[in-house]
Amino acid sequence: MLKIAGAKVFKNDEFVEDDIFIEGDRIVATGDEMGEVIDAKGLLAIPGLVDVHSHGAVGHDFCDGTHESIDAITRYEASRGVTAWCGTTMTFPEEKLAGIMECAAEHVDAPDAAALVGINMEGPFISPEKVGAQNPAYVQQCNAAMFCRLQNASGGKIKLVDIAPEEPGALEFVDEMHDAVRISVAHTCANYDQAAEAFRRGAKHVTHLYNAMPGLHHRKPGVIPAALEAGATPEIIADGVHIHPAMVRLAFSMFGAERMILISDSMEATGMPDGEYSLGGQAVTKNGSHATLHDGTLAGSATDLMGCMKVAATEMGLPLEVAVRAATENPARAIGVFDERGSLDAGKVADVVLLNADLNVAGVILRGKRIR
Image 1 (cartoon, rainbow, N blue to C red):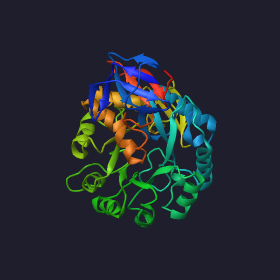
Image 2 (cartoon, rainbow, N blue to C red):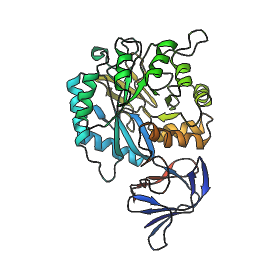
Image 3 (cartoon, rainbow, N blue to C red):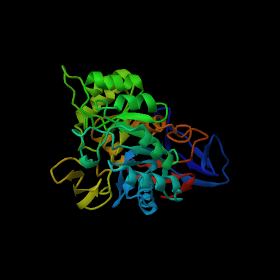
Image 4 (cartoon, helix red, strand yellow):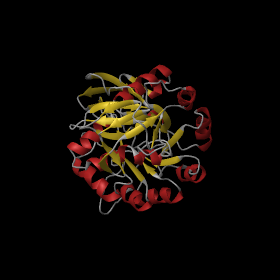
């Protein structure tokens, strides 16, 4: 039995003084005083964060397709309080994607590493006009048969797949696959009507809101109002680089605290010194919090999800409770793992993060074991 005593615990969207009891790898409702006690007085206790959109960190990329890279990334994530992680692919040919999926299917989580709870398939079914940092050479139209082959190779791990609704075959893909995987509108030039139709047919998610899509315009409303009206769940990158704080606040005001999802979109430069790195086979320069292609295009983020949550709460004006929910419960619900993760309710996996008054990580309990 492990007891975390004296913390202000995040429960039901607020912080309350309470104790947390852990038996094995699960949170339990009550416990005795016979086991280990962690004195957490003066600290905040939150659920382990759930990052549903991250390419890599510490010099490694999920698309390396190796267990070494997955272990390195997920160990780093766990040390930062991100205890559940979706590896995110880039736009590559099917042959390379299949190898990445097979590696993920075979992967076994290390004891001190975040759980690989899913895969976010960001490419290749995107618009050639909105590739961002994706490689345009490998962009292709939606292909349900190809997706099914990759899903089989992954052992069913693909939780999200991105599409550009305006591209030929995209709406038919939504018709065919919306019950099999959560479909996200992304890297798109879609107008309002095209996006609304994709949501009507079964798309439920939006990849990195505002980025790689038409902006808000009063005569050309685009994807964002269509997603709002359809009840979709939008991801957003709150690293202080991708989106102005006012637009982050606007998104949370529009969509509500129960729908917004904080993501990192982190790439291999995260947790590394400034210098030259790679994303999707393209050269990237990291300079502080900025990661860009050589033409200046933003190339993912150099900030992990804990860093993004802290920026959202301390620099963007979001209430801490709202930021925590957007990094825990909401992403866990979106990818279908909320029965196991995303809150500190009894019966959940015992992933607990302790934060100090400056919102820096003071401790991490991963699957019932303290790793930091």
